[in-house]
Amino acid sequence: MVTKQGKPSERRDALVRIAAELFAEQGYRATTVRHIGDAAGVLSGSLYHHFDSKETILDELLSSYLDELLATYRTVVDAGHGPARTLRELVRASFRSMAGHRAAITVLQNERNHLRTLPRFGYLATTEDEVRHLWITALREGVETGEFRADLDPAIAYRFLRDSVWGSVRWIRQDGARSLDQLADQYLTLTFDGLTATGA
Amino acid sequence: MVTKQGKPSERRDALVRIAAELFAEQGYRATTVRHIGDAAGVLSGSLYHHFDSKETILDELLSSYLDELLATYRTVVDAGHGPARTLRELVRASFRSMAGHRAAITVLQNERNHLRTLPRFGYLATTEDEVRHLWITALREGVETGEFRADLDPAIAYRFLRDSVWGSVRWIRQDGARSLDQLADQYLTLTFDGLTATGA
DNA sequence: TTCCTACCCAAGCGCTAGCTTGGTAGCTTA
DNA sequence: TAAGCTACCAAGCTAGCGCTTGGGTAGGAA
Image 1: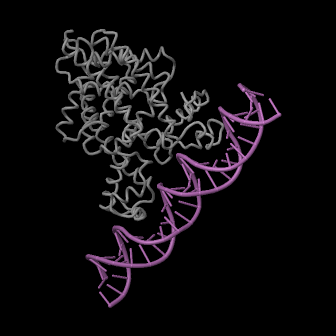
Image 2: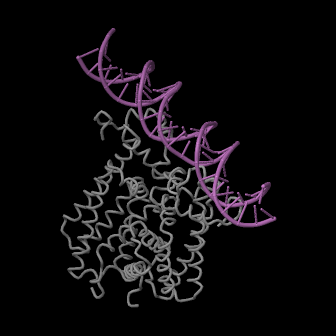
């Protein structure tokens, strides 16, 4: 993390976290710099000692989260497990990332369509492309090895998984990593084996 | 549809549809009355001949959609098919509703958290409660009859289904009801039978 | 011909948004 | 002990917001 002038600052990090909570609760646009200032115990103008703009706060929040998520995904894929296990680990990693980044994910979901039109947030599309590629590769390979059903459309299955997994961030309770892993297991059962009773 | 004075008006309906597209693309708050006026070929002030407020436009959009959706759901449930078929029809009905109501659904998803805090939109919570009840009842009965897996948590399965089905409204292409039915079929296969190849 | 209704324009009000500017208290370093 | 840096305050700027007001026009009914 760097200040407006390019130097590190703990205060800056704290302000990003404070703003993130407000962004997640009320939306980015509905959150005013005066709200952020109030929550931080500071006048709104004082925020501009740390940041160029309100947009910069959002940028820092989103880019740092996406960098971390992408690195995690790459590690999972590079481990070289088979397609099915890779996909399982991707799902698990996604749920785990919700523990420390609930606000960033919520903002990303609610504001994604709008932000992607801004040049500054062009990296959102880039990152999303790479993520999609990682997931779809696992899905396609799983069809080839026969682990996944032959009539699976990887593009549709990816969006199905993405929407169901990330959608849970809107209602999830933050009870620590353990319950997140349990939830991940339930979702893995649902997505891999379906609702239907085995033997029915 | 009625005007500010309580009389029907086609112009009013057209304005709601125009505003709905803008709300869906840019978000409700980011859409200004001047935007709506421009899109309708009218000065912003002229909108107030038809509506009390910008909020009234949104209210009309959402309430009319929700009324229709709930009526459809009730018809499906009242048909009295078994739990599995009822759930399948609920999913299908949801996808079909996306054809004519993409804008309303998008707005609803992006703005739900915020709108629920406003007294005027209290019916959002009421409707959501009834929808959840209908879906969860089908899920619970399916577990009891043995059609669905015994270890299924109806509350989690409902949110899983809801997020995956409704999440698709963000990326779906509007190619007519036929492709929506095809997509519904793919989702039904995924959610009922899972990704895993049968016999694996 | 007169009136009514539906629809719209022109102008602008009060307010709040993001952001700027000039200044200051307190700590650190030379 | 003076200079410099970090973090902040106080005050206010401009732009744009939702909405209001007063007036005007076209077309059908009486």
